[in-house]
Image (cartoon, rainbow, N blue to C red; front, side):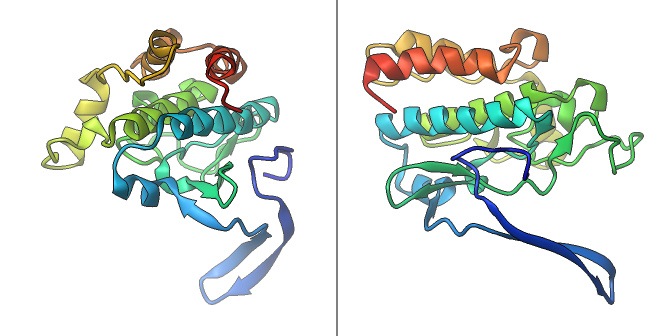
Length: 224
């Protein structure tokens, strides 16, 4: 996380290790961000159009820096995004992030990877480690933007019977278009649909590519 120099990611103030009765423990003290998580904001329904665009812009700016550092967050979701008192969005909790150059600490042979079902893409759910890169974060952000624009995560509506049914929905269901009341409605809709494609090769190739796309939308709409 220290490698990600972004104004959208809290700063690491201190870190260290300690020995507990459960074994070695690594601790981190990071910058406190006052505000509400996007999950809390969604209690009131869909976010305002400007907030949806600003959230997407700020998160992509954070993920672009992570991409440059070869880090995949792997857990982008409303609970891990906070809106501060000035309307800036911050990306939190790199607890299951992975550095693409370093060896994985989790077993490769497990049928399911570390993730949050309903936001993680199919390749991450199935623990196909060789296929997990920045496009996994783009998928999760796309699902989050869709939820912020519509007020619900369609993978959970109606409530699934179990995790297996939810996994099948992520692999098979196509999210409905998000039509925000903006001039660039079609462009934004196409971006979100591109980000949430099941096959990663059909998503934007990089976060930087998706960010250029979104910046053009936000520029037209006066969002920064």
